Length: 201
Image (cartoon, rainbow, N blue to C red):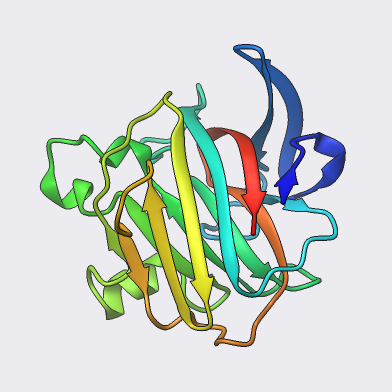
């Protein structure tokens, strides 16, 4: 199923959304509400009427840093899924485009990330299971990046730029195999996120 990238098809949750023309294609622009200071929060454009349990989500994303982006900004953006009605529980896979070609290898190893809201944000996962929920993938700012997420029960895989094999594998989605809910386009602080070609199947 192709989802039209019209702003009226989305609910802005702790974010600001609008449509704009990007090289002749209508895309959805998403920015986090700066009033939300915590990280890995429900800051996304939620697809109205979507219900997702198992399957595949694909979207093309492009990230830019906002003029007032903090030093730690990495161009964070990605996909949230199995979101409950009140945006109190969901899973997410996202990317950090500035890390993909950084000269620091540790930064490169943190190009992709899984987190589970509300209890397993990136910092807890990094502290308790170093390196298990993040990985390297080649990417950069201001370029279109293909993201694909495959979900089956407790298992999720992230593919970047049509990679043959997943760049990140999660074997224990924290909300369990039976969770289901909406999907959304997620952004973090300092990011101007652009999204197009959203497909769910």
